[in-house]
Image (cartoon, rainbow, N blue to C red; front, side):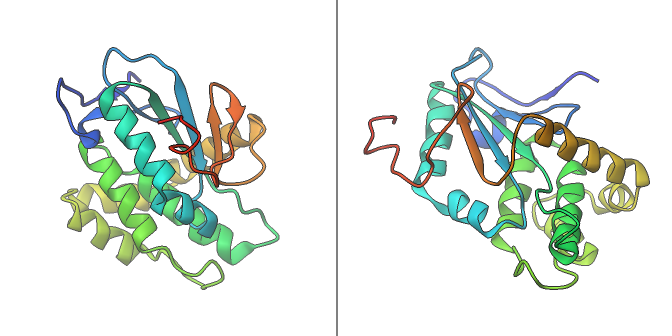
Amino acid sequence: MAPTVAARAGAVVDDLVELEWDGTVRIAQLDVAGPTLEIYEDYQCPVCLEFEQGDNNALAREMVVKGAIAVMIHPLTIFRDDKPITRENSRRALIASLCVQDPRKWLRYHDELYAHQPDEFQKGGFPNEQLVQLARKVGIPVAEFTACLKSSETAERADAVTALALSRGVTGTPTIRYQGQDLDWTASWREAGQG
């Protein structure tokens, strides 16, 4: 399956999203191959929420629009069987993100998932009804989205996406890598002169 591309000159970040077959989301100007900033994240991870709301994430998006970097987002379920409630919340959100077929709406849906992140120990967090409401909010056709949410094929794809991320040595989220090297995302990249 070829990547789905939505990009154009002078675009805003939503217009630069490509959805790849393996669940990776590439955000870059069309002619930018790198350098690459990779973000491995879990929608149920409270520390990922800190990164999402922080200045380093804002800087990364600014740099993408300027054509300075390419960002690769790798959503996954980092929680394992020892945290079954948290794992299931995470997995539902991951499945939902894989059901967003329109690249221009993917990042908005991604941001809505973080804006509505439940407590990680809340049983039934990210219920399907809420995931559908968020899809409707960002303009995603809900009939197709709902069918995708309930599909065993999508659930299997979510597990494969997670397995791929874990095979790359990801042991926690967020894991932020620049050109293959793990970065300290808690320190200001602007102050370090990386912006």
